[in-house]
Length: 583
Image (tube, rainbow, N blue to C red; front, side, top):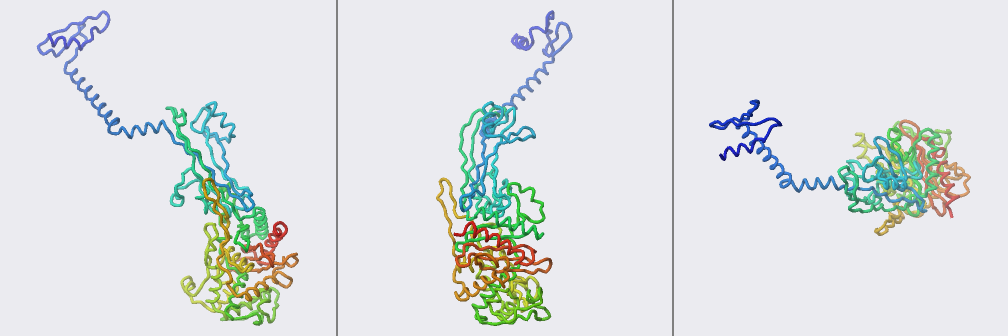
């Protein structure tokens, strides 16, 4: 009876209207027949069904235990992460100013409405309107799309100051070892002071913790931390002078056809870099168009280019000869035009160009006329080591320390270097070529300008560009001139060479563009011969002579004669300075 009630509870009371059920008893109660004889249910199949159901429920329970107990904490975090989002907002980089507070670089916020593959720039007012209507937002994608905020770097001078300032670009994987604790959404400084002072210029990102629904739409802002802009830099650069320097160099380099050159302008009394230009340049706001340029527009020739200095190095040779006692103010050497040494010819430029000589001359006229024969003979008597020691005193063969990246060292060669590089001995002819700035000697324009600045003031300063760093909640830091050394040579020797530089830019000297200048300068021309191609054109000067406020060094790669090609660039720069800045 108990078993019969159990079975009856498992069977539907009816299968349908007009259908009756009839149970047939059997000894083992294994089969049930309906009255119509159509269906039969095997009791063993019911047990299988119950077992399978029990097994499935057991599996579900086990899985539920795993999800809620074993991995509960992790899954709760994932669930919360899908509901709560942390959004970072890029911070603007610090502003860069020139010495008078004029703008050199700044960051501006732009808003972009993205929908599918289309991107439209919109105003901040449009952003507010779209968010109020729920059509688009910075935090979720609405019917009209998603609003993205970007920070763009603006450079008012464009390519004219690109090598000083550098540029910025998106964070790259290789930046991990270069950039400390910086969010990956922040731009990274490349080249120039953008790179050198990247840690100061980089701000702190803003953060928003928002709650969203299952569709990714913002429900509420749970927390917000505003971004903090980077620290501002104040530089020694004169914006107007920078434009003049770059345009004058660029025009001359393009006119000559080489398109390559560099200009460095300093205040020789402080080491402040007033202007620095390299040509060809690039647009720091659109670097992509210059990437494939074979002229290396990103290469800063003012500090990274190495060249034989040619006759501008005769200043060093003259001082080395005077300091060693090898020569004095009255030492006479005859310009024979050309002589042979070991089968090699050593000639003066005046003889090669005009077939003439300067006759018997002293050190003063040798500087004024840039006489090669005189300095060949001085170097011959002086020897390699004395030349090298004076060159190193002036900073050749090492970096100047200017606050720009990738400064080149140059080369002050010796016997060991030549043996290693060429498997050959050092000869007397090598020393003589060294004495006129040729041969293996390599210098940078910034090194030559440091030497020129010393000849202006008798003091050797470390060149620098950033004079002050300022920011919120940051103790202002100011930088002044860093005097490296003074009185490198005896005053009389210094003055003797300096006087020769003054007369080099007067009638009879080699600095022809300055012959009619209404002010006095100290100058030196240079024409650095190369194995192949035209010589590099050099010119370096300081002005005004009696109270120097500016030193200018110009290099035009493969430009030819320094007096013809590089000197006019320097003249244009000094003229502008004397008219607009001299007091």
